[in-house]
Length: 503
Image (cartoon, rainbow, N blue to C red):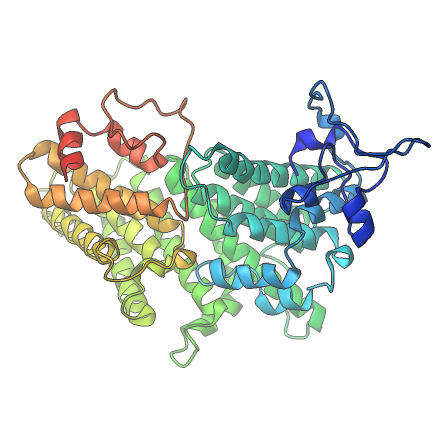
């Protein structure tokens, strides 16, 4: 519920909510439930001898942070109002269809066991987690022209952020609260809310530490059922933290991931849960197996990132480290290709992270001065050839979707795809600037940019116009394009933009 609606509260529930015995937020001039259901909302005056609806407030009330509820009961009631009329079962279904397939950081069985019969019986942290699931599965507004939809879309995000701050201030922390933070950060990553995502990942780590969700937790075989459940939750949470932290570091600059200094201790803790996933007889569709692959891919992505941004003077040693990591990535890429099967390339978060890492490595290798001796003498030529190969692969897969040969299941597309396609498009753009007569590269760039536009139906990265100043010449239809397209436009000449528009 938007903050400005909390400034005026009626003394009693509205007539409709009172008659139907529904929870009413008593907001003026219309309560939240009636407004959501597009029903007329009327209040009876509490003063004796007076009847009729409460008049609309005039003048418009001043927005005040003091109007936000700061007690646990009020905060829970406010969150539940955001969830009505959606049922707890609807939330579970949304998670299973639109998050769990590519980011399984919440146990479905544990989530199902916590489902309350009604929202009134839901604990505060569970209601908050459900609201976060609702946030990340919501369809973004298709155009900035729909100002109301865009406002509501971002208002829910800001309301959840405020709720997390309120819960933190009231001293509440739990597994569900940490999982809520993970989903909010995932939302920020997907929709391009930076530096919010970079700041949020640090808050998640501190929240996990404060809850003593640590990689040195006792994981002895004699643990009770509750301890086993706690260990499962801990494994999923730290898996999500590692993946997000490593990906956010790639997007945010040259600094290493926050968890980099203790990656080994975290990996040691996760090892008992992740090692069995390497058994060839293990069900590859199992959630812990899919999470394991994501963690492996993100670990190699972290190595690439740290190596490329290393300040070491011994440049050749860095190149050798890069080559070894690339070789490992190629092996993992082959394994993942076998596991995901045909036609699901873009839906595999692990494959996307592998290809982002390879693309970054080959991009770097194609630009370094060739060495005159040793095993790395031809690395520049090999890297350039490999870079072209991976760009062609990404373009070919994307083209199948753009030609409607395969329908896009937007629920299954992880946000990591956008950065992969963006980096491929950025490299093709640079190649076109050096060779404007390359018809094949121009075709590739059109396909990649078209796919980025299509991705806006699921992950809409608006960005802040004040932070990214575009060139004077832009495509007319791009009134408010995705953040990646804006960056591409900045690095594109007016002549090339005109050629793209003609296509």
